[in-house]
Length: 293
Image (tube, rainbow, N blue to C red; front, side):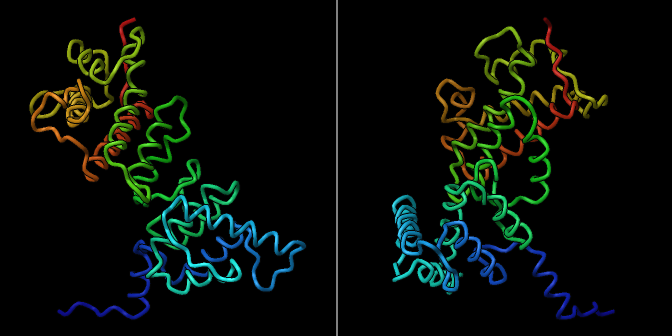
């Protein structure tokens, strides 16, 4: 029996449900309006008391964007014309426009959340980290888990957020993201497992758990086929995370010839998502540090 043919409306709905890269056509007007409003650029039909002064400040902002981003923005007589010209070619100017949106979201005070709403509702592949006020790539599924720990007390969530922006931002820094992922796990577990030890590292935590597995408990009671408990596997995950860090002098990874000398984007993403899992387990009470005081 032949498969039923999709109607044009079904195909359109399927395409819309995908995340859209760049600056898709259905978001051009909304993003242009947001950019003009957020930069204070006067539109053609807008009455301003000091239109020339507003345009002068807008030109200064565009020059600042050029200096900091490295993009060349062809000037027009009026700033509104400059911005409109960019949005007339959204595909060819996609990278420039995303950089400009990222820049404006970061330098303005109150508008990052409104940009996030436009991008999220428009199924963009990009969203806004409203705390860092930066564009980051959307990761469906993981975003919910990440959002669940962002408001938790302590520094682990803040450090992990920094790792997230470094791995999923417009200009990823994989090695720095990997380093931050390890720092986030250290912030979550070091003082919990080793409360009396100053300046402890993830290596100290894994060594302590190897010597005394009862320092960490997991809510899963059953073991794997090899007889390892969920708590032991948690320690193994920490150790694996640490042993890939071949570029860090004195680390366990630096002693392993198979460890990478810098993190690839894929390795950094794996590290950030593993850190998210470990920290989520601790925050939710799935993993319970049980230090000997």
